[in-house]
Image (cartoon, rainbow, N blue to C red; front, top):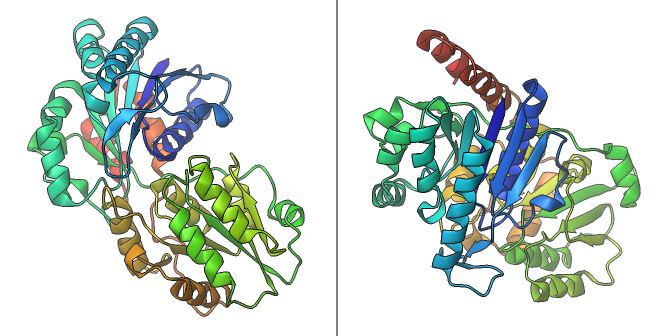
Length: 406
């Protein structure tokens, strides 16, 4: 069986990390599966890729914090790079001839770059199944509906796609009701639950020894995913340390590979001379460090939240609010369920963050995690993809199996 995965990735690490986790699980769960990832992510090479999974790297585009599209590395106009990416995607699909295609988030791809490939599948590979994969939350209702209407996403899903898999739970966010998709699109939607992450490669004890954390000390991990917009959170945390007790707490800051070098240098200078703070630019084994921590201070991206829920970690989440409200909506709804504490960026001050950290590491704050959130997305996706390459489940059986408990 052949599976092709498209992930555009112009901002941060979120999309490619999420899709790579799905690919690795599918490869383990489905015998004789070959997976080809087509991505614009500049960071995929930094992650360990399982045998049986390969990738084609598209020329990089970038999206600014304000949402504007541009070229990341090449000295070309964005239209030229998009045209090149279209041809590479089309050639990949026509040569690889996948049985199933998973498309991350954008039904027609970034700037419509998937449209030629989708047309090719419709006319030349009619037996191939095309599946849209959406994270739990895209944005607030009005801008999402506007974006879907302007990009003709409803029509694209109705015409090209066999299924829409939502990596979330209706208990937290029901995309069918929130985004008012067309009746035809809603009929294809399956809420699969959240993505449970694989354990880290090292034990909690080994990581704490590496970082010099004594048995009676607490470890705080501060992370902001790719790090492109996480500097304010880390600066606030470091400033708050100046007025915190310096004993019994150690900190590891992971800046992220996409943080601008001047900002990273500023943070390293701010942390310089502190024996209780270590700074790391990037790790492909963040789960090991998160498992070793007693508290995680982070932004509210999908992958980070899934890691917190998988490990049932105490956390303080400072969600991004621009250019989309996805992180804020997720953080506020999960915070209301008692899963972690949320501080909005507008309220972020060193003193506010310091008090929250002290409250969490002292155990005063209450935490509810176990059993509240469905984390079974990966096995559900594996069963669905497996059935797509075979005779398929009857509709009633599919509904019972894939929506049970959601």
